Amino acid sequence: MTNLLNHYKKKVAPSLTKKFAYKNIMQCPKVEKVVINIGIGEAKDHSKSVDIAVNELTLLSGQKAVVTKAKKSISNFKLRQGMSIGCKVTLRGARMYDFLDRLFNIAMPRIRDFQGSDYNSFDSNGNYNLGIKEQYIFPEIDLDKSDRARGMNITIVCSSKNIEQNRAMLFEMGMPFKKRK
Image (tube, rainbow, N blue to C red):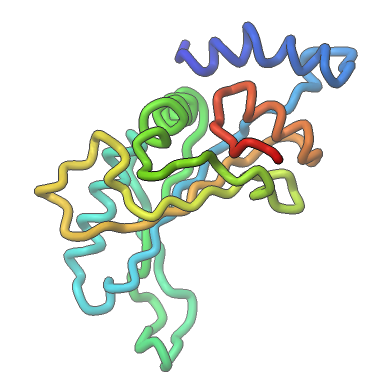
């Protein structure tokens, strides 16, 4: 069992059960999946950048990334239907907890001038969205093999629709939120 999953089962779930007065520990919110998405704007000009981004995302996540294609043509962006425009990966289970553990404890503290994650980045379904400006915060990425800094969007999909419960769960799991004023 991974460290973060073990921490969730031993400390976070009982704490949330007590805090929100659940009758059963199975009512606690859980992380269902993590979706990591990289948009590659220069892919229409440099086809090799898609391969580099897929390799980097595969290194980060531990599973093969899927190339995303344009659904329709947009003439203003010189984009044709079916062109590669990004890559994504969906993590579940042990890989998801391994990635979240590395994100919370290794990568996020390496962000320059990091004050904490935004407290209100939850959508209406209770999922947390996090944007990262460059992939170099992860120690797995080799600077020599990367051609440029790419941003990524990380969506943490939670089982509960209640934002306050999901926020408490992520905080107890180790998500570094900004200090509230």
